[in-house]
Image (cartoon, rainbow, N blue to C red; front, top):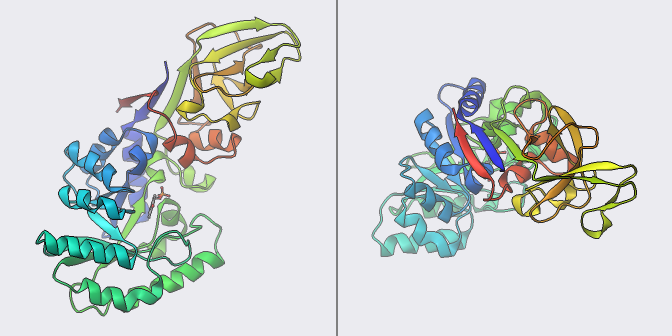
Length: 363
Ligand SMILES: *Cc1c(COP(=O)(O)O)cnc(C)c1O
Protein backbone atom coordinates (compact mmCIF):
# COMPACT_ATOMS: atom_id res chain seq x y z
CA UNK A 1 0.00 0.00 0.00
CA UNK A 2 1.70 3.21 1.11
CA UNK A 3 5.44 3.04 1.48
CA UNK A 4 8.12 5.51 2.46
CA UNK A 5 11.33 4.05 1.07
CA UNK A 6 14.40 5.37 2.85
CA UNK A 7 17.88 5.12 1.36
CA UNK A 8 20.65 5.03 3.95
CA UNK A 9 23.40 5.39 1.35
CA UNK A 10 21.92 8.82 0.56
CA UNK A 11 22.08 9.69 4.25
CA UNK A 12 25.78 8.71 4.21
CA UNK A 13 26.26 10.88 1.13
CA UNK A 14 24.64 13.89 2.80
CA UNK A 15 26.80 13.34 5.86
CA UNK A 16 29.95 13.50 3.73
CA UNK A 17 28.64 16.59 1.88
CA UNK A 18 28.06 18.34 5.22
CA UNK A 19 31.52 17.29 6.42
CA UNK A 20 33.00 18.85 3.28
CA UNK A 21 31.71 22.26 4.41
CA UNK A 22 33.31 21.88 7.83
CA UNK A 23 36.73 22.19 9.39
CA UNK A 24 38.09 18.82 10.51
CA UNK A 25 37.58 19.71 14.19
CA UNK A 26 33.98 20.91 13.91
CA UNK A 27 31.64 18.49 15.64
CA UNK A 28 28.35 17.35 14.13
CA UNK A 29 25.07 17.09 15.98
CA UNK A 30 22.52 15.07 14.02
CA UNK A 31 18.99 16.24 14.80
CA UNK A 32 16.53 13.33 14.93
CA UNK A 33 13.52 15.04 16.52
CA UNK A 34 9.99 14.20 15.39
CA UNK A 35 10.85 10.62 14.51
CA UNK A 36 13.91 11.74 12.55
CA UNK A 37 11.84 14.18 10.51
CA UNK A 38 9.11 11.63 9.96
CA UNK A 39 11.42 8.96 8.55
CA UNK A 40 12.32 6.01 10.82
CA UNK A 41 14.07 7.16 13.96
CA UNK A 42 15.52 3.82 15.05
CA UNK A 43 17.26 3.02 11.76
CA UNK A 44 18.30 6.62 11.17
CA UNK A 45 19.64 7.18 14.71
CA UNK A 46 21.57 3.91 14.55
CA UNK A 47 23.05 4.92 11.21
CA UNK A 48 24.15 8.25 12.68
CA UNK A 49 25.75 6.43 15.58
CA UNK A 50 27.60 4.17 13.14
CA UNK A 51 28.70 7.18 11.06
CA UNK A 52 30.26 8.64 14.19
CA UNK A 53 28.30 11.83 14.77
CA UNK A 54 29.19 13.52 18.05
CA UNK A 55 25.65 14.07 19.31
CA UNK A 56 22.07 13.23 18.52
CA UNK A 57 19.40 15.82 19.32
CA UNK A 58 15.68 15.55 19.95
CA UNK A 59 13.10 18.18 20.80
CA UNK A 60 11.52 16.55 23.87
CA UNK A 61 12.73 14.23 26.63
CA UNK A 62 10.27 11.47 25.70
CA UNK A 63 11.88 11.27 22.27
CA UNK A 64 15.27 10.77 23.90
CA UNK A 65 13.88 8.00 26.06
CA UNK A 66 12.67 6.19 22.94
CA UNK A 67 16.17 6.43 21.43
CA UNK A 68 17.73 5.01 24.61
CA UNK A 69 15.23 2.14 24.46
CA UNK A 70 16.50 1.42 20.93
CA UNK A 71 19.94 1.01 22.48
CA UNK A 72 21.47 4.32 21.35
CA UNK A 73 24.56 4.97 23.49
CA UNK A 74 25.99 8.27 22.23
CA UNK A 75 25.13 11.59 23.92
CA UNK A 76 21.58 12.79 23.26
CA UNK A 77 20.70 16.48 23.61
CA UNK A 78 17.14 17.52 24.44
CA UNK A 79 16.50 20.93 22.86
CA UNK A 80 13.23 21.79 24.57
CA UNK A 81 12.87 19.91 27.87
CA UNK A 82 9.72 20.73 29.84
CA UNK A 83 9.75 21.11 33.62
CA UNK A 84 7.58 18.01 34.04
CA UNK A 85 9.93 15.82 32.00
CA UNK A 86 13.22 16.51 33.82
CA UNK A 87 13.05 13.15 35.57
CA UNK A 88 12.97 11.43 32.18
CA UNK A 89 16.06 13.45 31.26
CA UNK A 90 17.96 12.10 34.27
CA UNK A 91 16.69 8.53 34.05
CA UNK A 92 17.87 8.27 30.45
CA UNK A 93 21.14 10.17 30.78
CA UNK A 94 19.95 12.84 28.34
CA UNK A 95 21.60 16.26 28.15
CA UNK A 96 19.08 19.07 28.58
CA UNK A 97 19.24 22.49 26.98
CA UNK A 98 18.29 24.97 29.66
CA UNK A 99 16.51 28.03 28.35
CA UNK A 100 15.02 29.84 31.36
CA UNK A 101 15.92 30.71 34.94
CA UNK A 102 13.09 28.63 36.36
CA UNK A 103 14.04 25.57 34.29
CA UNK A 104 17.69 25.90 35.32
CA UNK A 105 16.84 26.27 39.01
CA UNK A 106 14.38 23.35 38.94
CA UNK A 107 16.95 21.15 37.24
CA UNK A 108 19.63 22.12 39.76
CA UNK A 109 17.41 21.21 42.71
CA UNK A 110 16.65 17.88 41.09
CA UNK A 111 20.40 17.24 40.67
CA UNK A 112 21.01 18.10 44.32
CA UNK A 113 18.15 15.87 45.45
CA UNK A 114 19.47 12.96 43.38
CA UNK A 115 23.09 13.63 44.34
CA UNK A 116 24.19 14.18 40.74
CA UNK A 117 27.53 15.91 40.15
CA UNK A 118 28.89 17.52 36.99
CA UNK A 119 25.76 16.71 34.99
CA UNK A 120 26.18 17.75 31.33
CA UNK A 121 23.90 20.62 30.29
CA UNK A 122 23.64 23.14 27.45
CA UNK A 123 22.50 26.75 27.51
CA UNK A 124 20.24 28.18 24.84
CA UNK A 125 20.15 31.95 24.22
CA UNK A 126 17.43 33.86 22.42
CA UNK A 127 19.19 36.27 20.08
CA UNK A 128 16.25 37.19 17.89
CA UNK A 129 14.03 34.22 17.03
CA UNK A 130 11.97 34.97 20.15
CA UNK A 131 10.95 31.38 20.70
CA UNK A 132 12.93 29.89 23.60
CA UNK A 133 16.14 30.93 25.28
CA UNK A 134 17.75 33.14 27.89
CA UNK A 135 18.04 36.82 27.05
CA UNK A 136 21.66 37.85 26.41
CA UNK A 137 21.50 40.03 29.57
CA UNK A 138 21.37 36.83 31.67
CA UNK A 139 24.94 35.85 30.81
CA UNK A 140 26.47 36.81 34.18
CA UNK A 141 23.70 35.07 36.11
CA UNK A 142 24.15 31.93 33.98
CA UNK A 143 27.92 31.95 34.43
CA UNK A 144 27.57 32.13 38.21
CA UNK A 145 24.82 29.49 38.33
CA UNK A 146 26.60 27.01 36.07
CA UNK A 147 29.82 27.29 38.08
CA UNK A 148 28.12 25.00 40.59
CA UNK A 149 29.47 21.50 41.10
CA UNK A 150 26.10 20.04 40.05
CA UNK A 151 26.51 21.14 36.47
CA UNK A 152 28.96 20.68 33.66
CA UNK A 153 28.24 23.37 31.07
CA UNK A 154 29.03 21.56 27.83
CA UNK A 155 27.87 24.10 25.30
CA UNK A 156 26.28 27.47 24.69
CA UNK A 157 24.24 28.11 21.59
CA UNK A 158 21.63 30.13 19.77
CA UNK A 159 19.50 29.59 16.69
CA UNK A 160 19.26 31.84 13.62
CA UNK A 161 15.81 32.95 12.55
CA UNK A 162 16.55 33.06 8.82
CA UNK A 163 19.76 31.16 8.14
CA UNK A 164 18.70 30.50 4.54
CA UNK A 165 18.07 34.18 3.69
CA UNK A 166 20.39 35.74 1.18
CA UNK A 167 23.34 37.48 2.78
CA UNK A 168 23.59 40.09 4.12
CA UNK A 169 20.61 39.47 6.36
CA UNK A 170 20.08 42.24 8.88
CA UNK A 171 18.23 39.93 11.25
CA UNK A 172 20.94 37.25 11.19
CA UNK A 173 23.70 39.84 11.50
CA UNK A 174 22.11 41.21 14.66
CA UNK A 175 21.86 37.69 16.06
CA UNK A 176 25.46 36.91 15.13
CA UNK A 177 26.69 40.10 16.84
CA UNK A 178 24.78 39.21 20.01
CA UNK A 179 26.09 35.66 19.95
CA UNK A 180 29.66 36.95 19.64
CA UNK A 181 29.14 39.09 22.75
CA UNK A 182 27.71 36.13 24.64
CA UNK A 183 30.62 33.94 23.52
CA UNK A 184 33.18 36.50 24.74
CA UNK A 185 31.49 36.68 28.14
CA UNK A 186 31.46 32.89 28.52
CA UNK A 187 35.07 32.57 27.40
CA UNK A 188 36.29 34.16 30.63
CA UNK A 189 34.72 31.37 32.70
CA UNK A 190 37.28 29.95 35.09
CA UNK A 191 36.04 26.38 34.84
CA UNK A 192 36.23 24.70 31.45
CA UNK A 193 35.11 26.86 28.53
CA UNK A 194 31.98 25.48 26.86
CA UNK A 195 31.62 24.72 23.18
CA UNK A 196 29.71 27.20 21.00
CA UNK A 197 27.32 26.55 18.12
CA UNK A 198 24.89 28.53 16.01
CA UNK A 199 24.23 26.84 12.67
CA UNK A 200 21.49 24.55 11.40
CA UNK A 201 21.53 22.92 7.94
CA UNK A 202 21.16 26.02 5.78
CA UNK A 203 23.49 27.89 8.12
CA UNK A 204 26.24 25.38 7.33
CA UNK A 205 26.02 26.31 3.66
CA UNK A 206 25.29 30.04 4.09
CA UNK A 207 27.63 30.89 6.98
CA UNK A 208 30.45 28.31 6.91
CA UNK A 209 32.72 30.79 8.73
CA UNK A 210 30.38 30.65 11.77
CA UNK A 211 30.61 26.94 12.43
CA UNK A 212 32.36 27.51 15.80
CA UNK A 213 32.82 24.15 17.59
CA UNK A 214 29.76 22.30 16.31
CA UNK A 215 26.85 22.44 13.85
CA UNK A 216 23.32 21.11 14.29
CA UNK A 217 21.97 19.49 11.14
CA UNK A 218 18.60 17.88 10.57
CA UNK A 219 16.96 18.51 7.21
CA UNK A 220 20.28 18.43 5.29
CA UNK A 221 20.65 14.74 6.15
CA UNK A 222 17.28 14.26 4.43
CA UNK A 223 18.55 16.01 1.33
CA UNK A 224 17.39 19.60 1.71
CA UNK A 225 18.93 22.88 2.82
CA UNK A 226 16.21 25.40 1.91
CA UNK A 227 17.81 26.68 -1.29
CA UNK A 228 18.03 25.00 -4.72
CA UNK A 229 21.78 25.70 -4.86
CA UNK A 230 22.46 23.80 -1.63
CA UNK A 231 19.78 21.18 -2.29
CA UNK A 232 21.75 20.32 -5.42
CA UNK A 233 24.69 19.25 -3.22
CA UNK A 234 22.52 16.77 -1.32
CA UNK A 235 20.44 13.68 -2.10
CA UNK A 236 16.87 13.25 -0.82
CA UNK A 237 16.68 10.02 1.15
CA UNK A 238 12.92 9.36 0.93
CA UNK A 239 10.52 8.15 -1.76
CA UNK A 240 6.82 8.21 -0.96
CA UNK A 241 4.74 5.85 -3.03
CA UNK A 242 1.20 4.58 -3.01
CA UNK A 243 -0.90 2.29 -5.20
CA UNK A 244 -4.23 2.74 -6.94
CA UNK A 245 -7.17 1.22 -5.01
CA UNK A 246 -9.86 1.71 -7.66
CA UNK A 247 -10.52 3.51 -10.95
CA UNK A 248 -13.82 5.15 -11.94
CA UNK A 249 -14.94 6.37 -15.32
CA UNK A 250 -17.11 9.38 -14.60
CA UNK A 251 -19.25 11.39 -16.97
CA UNK A 252 -18.61 15.03 -17.78
CA UNK A 253 -20.23 17.25 -15.14
CA UNK A 254 -19.88 14.78 -12.25
CA UNK A 255 -18.64 15.81 -8.83
CA UNK A 256 -15.57 14.14 -7.35
CA UNK A 257 -15.06 13.89 -3.60
CA UNK A 258 -16.64 15.56 -0.58
CA UNK A 259 -18.42 18.90 -0.86
CA UNK A 260 -18.55 18.77 -4.67
CA UNK A 261 -14.80 19.47 -4.63
CA UNK A 262 -14.35 19.11 -8.37
CA UNK A 263 -16.75 18.99 -11.31
CA UNK A 264 -15.34 17.02 -14.23
CA UNK A 265 -15.11 19.25 -17.32
CA UNK A 266 -15.05 16.20 -19.63
CA UNK A 267 -15.66 12.46 -19.33
CA UNK A 268 -12.87 11.53 -16.92
CA UNK A 269 -11.00 8.64 -15.39
CA UNK A 270 -10.44 9.04 -11.65
CA UNK A 271 -8.10 6.89 -9.55
CA UNK A 272 -8.41 6.62 -5.77
CA UNK A 273 -5.29 6.31 -3.58
CA UNK A 274 -5.25 5.00 0.01
CA UNK A 275 -3.59 8.08 1.47
CA UNK A 276 -5.31 11.09 3.00
CA UNK A 277 -4.95 13.99 5.38
CA UNK A 278 -4.63 11.58 8.32
CA UNK A 279 -1.43 10.38 6.66
CA UNK A 280 0.00 13.87 6.31
CA UNK A 281 -1.17 14.79 2.82
CA UNK A 282 -3.26 17.75 3.94
CA UNK A 283 -6.30 19.31 2.32
CA UNK A 284 -4.13 22.11 0.95
CA UNK A 285 -2.82 19.58 -1.61
CA UNK A 286 -6.33 18.96 -2.95
CA UNK A 287 -8.19 20.68 -5.77
CA UNK A 288 -5.36 20.64 -8.33
CA UNK A 289 -2.74 22.13 -6.00
CA UNK A 290 -0.69 18.97 -5.55
CA UNK A 291 0.35 16.49 -8.22
CA UNK A 292 1.73 12.96 -8.28
CA UNK A 293 3.52 10.80 -10.83
CA UNK A 294 2.14 7.65 -12.41
CA UNK A 295 4.12 5.81 -15.12
CA UNK A 296 6.27 8.93 -15.37
CA UNK A 297 3.29 11.19 -16.06
CA UNK A 298 2.40 14.06 -13.70
CA UNK A 299 -1.31 14.13 -12.78
CA UNK A 300 -3.24 16.40 -10.40
CA UNK A 301 -4.89 15.58 -7.09
CA UNK A 302 -8.57 16.43 -7.69
CA UNK A 303 -11.34 17.37 -5.30
CA UNK A 304 -10.90 17.61 -1.56
CA UNK A 305 -8.40 15.31 0.12
CA UNK A 306 -10.30 12.88 2.40
CA UNK A 307 -9.04 11.54 5.72
CA UNK A 308 -8.01 8.15 4.34
CA UNK A 309 -7.99 8.65 0.59
CA UNK A 310 -7.51 11.11 -2.20
CA UNK A 311 -8.40 11.11 -5.89
CA UNK A 312 -6.25 11.84 -8.92
CA UNK A 313 -7.20 12.55 -12.51
CA UNK A 314 -5.77 9.79 -14.72
CA UNK A 315 -7.93 10.49 -17.79
CA UNK A 316 -4.86 10.57 -20.02
CA UNK A 317 -2.90 7.75 -18.40
CA UNK A 318 -3.08 4.05 -19.16
CA UNK A 319 -3.25 2.53 -15.68
CA UNK A 320 -4.94 -0.09 -13.53
CA UNK A 321 -5.54 -0.81 -9.84
CA UNK A 322 -2.36 -1.49 -7.85
CA UNK A 323 -0.22 0.57 -10.22
CA UNK A 324 2.36 2.58 -8.28
CA UNK A 325 1.96 6.32 -7.79
CA UNK A 326 4.83 8.52 -6.59
CA UNK A 327 4.25 11.55 -4.38
CA UNK A 328 7.90 12.46 -4.19
CA UNK A 329 11.24 10.86 -4.82
CA UNK A 330 14.95 11.40 -4.87
CA UNK A 331 15.38 13.14 -8.23
CA UNK A 332 13.26 15.85 -9.88
CA UNK A 333 10.02 15.60 -7.89
CA UNK A 334 11.45 15.83 -4.39
CA UNK A 335 9.66 16.29 -1.06
CA UNK A 336 10.69 19.97 -1.26
CA UNK A 337 9.03 20.53 -4.64
CA UNK A 338 5.95 18.52 -3.66
CA UNK A 339 5.63 20.54 -0.43
CA UNK A 340 5.77 23.80 -2.36
CA UNK A 341 2.66 22.81 -4.33
CA UNK A 342 0.70 22.87 -1.07
CA UNK A 343 2.41 26.08 0.14
CA UNK A 344 4.25 23.98 2.68
CA UNK A 345 7.90 23.10 3.30
CA UNK A 346 9.84 19.84 3.31
CA UNK A 347 10.05 19.89 7.14
CA UNK A 348 6.26 19.96 7.54
CA UNK A 349 5.42 17.34 4.93
CA UNK A 350 8.14 14.90 6.01
CA UNK A 351 7.54 15.19 9.76
CA UNK A 352 3.77 14.96 9.22
CA UNK A 353 3.81 11.60 7.43
CA UNK A 354 1.57 9.38 9.52
CA UNK A 355 2.16 5.97 11.10
CA UNK A 356 -0.03 4.18 8.52
CA UNK A 357 2.71 4.69 5.93
CA UNK A 358 5.09 1.76 6.03
CA UNK A 359 8.75 2.74 6.42
CA UNK A 360 11.11 0.54 4.43
CA UNK A 361 14.84 0.80 5.02
CA UNK A 362 17.11 0.30 2.03
CA UNK A 363 20.87 0.59 1.72
C1 LIG B 1 15.44 21.47 14.56
C2 LIG B 1 16.63 22.23 15.00
C3 LIG B 1 17.82 22.20 14.26
C4 LIG B 1 17.94 21.50 12.93
O1 LIG B 1 17.51 22.36 11.90
P1 LIG B 1 17.62 21.96 10.38
O2 LIG B 1 17.19 23.18 9.66
O3 LIG B 1 16.71 20.81 10.18
O4 LIG B 1 19.03 21.59 10.14
C5 LIG B 1 18.93 22.85 14.77
N1 LIG B 1 18.86 23.51 15.95
C6 LIG B 1 17.74 23.58 16.68
C7 LIG B 1 17.76 24.31 17.96
C8 LIG B 1 16.58 22.95 16.22
O5 LIG B 1 15.45 23.02 16.94
